[in-house]
Length: 110
Image (cartoon, rainbow, N blue to C red; front, side):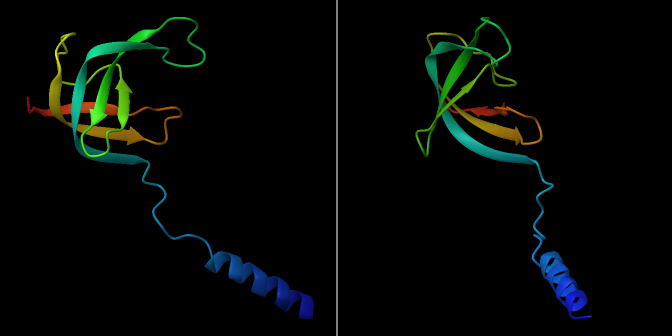
């Protein structure tokens, strides 16, 4: 009987300690101002893509100076050699393995 009570107590404690936070929310979004550099860098889209590289825009986040790399921004036509300042919406889907996220143009600042 004593073992039954101990086992039950441990089981109840384990259930009570489970997280109740919403970890099912796999999509996060964030609006940010970025500066698009006047050049692109060539990057491989993934480890199994062979040697094919594609051009990526270089974005510098205004508040953090963090560099982001993306093959494009939805709704934005990039012309190489021109520096832009944009307001974009960044969406990251954590359920997609190796997702770098997507960028959508909100407005051109400069």
